[in-house]
Image (cartoon, rainbow, N blue to C red):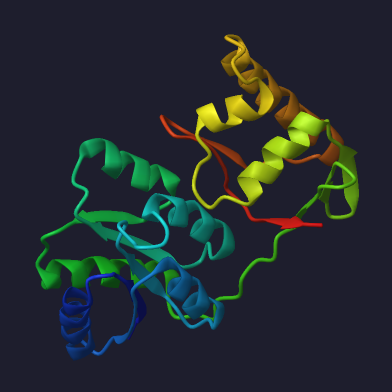
Length: 226
């Protein structure tokens, strides 16, 4: 038996899927949004998540890396209507174990779940607390008690990423640090380069910063704000 969490905003489809999986002796819960999913995961006892990418409150591509950071032991199976090849590649690179597209026959879905369950097995899931803290007023980035001092632009950049669950578009960042300066795009690249180097040198760890192709920048780990 596998503890399965279905994250799907089409309730009829989710219930049909759950009914089939329950007949196979799996234990199934359904959530229809990312916020409900995070709440369910915080209570533990999830072995496999079946994730739809088109959620009402958060895009699934943003969910995947955060789930991998907080719950690395959970099997993650994407089941979506986004069939484009580039989407498949992106989903797998972000951390999905399997990327399946709708429509799918439920016996095939069950076979993928069983394959994942052989890897992960039933277990308690405990969220990993963030070790990163951004101290906005002091302009400091802290990791496990060690701090580095940030410039105003570096602090604003990280704060912008911290308060957004989706990738922050480059044009938004450019507006914040360069305005109409035609060289602003290069300034963003240089800011990111210096910030990565500063974190690696001063904190001994790579900054969990992800460049989302064609979208902008996002954090691949949660930051505490202080």
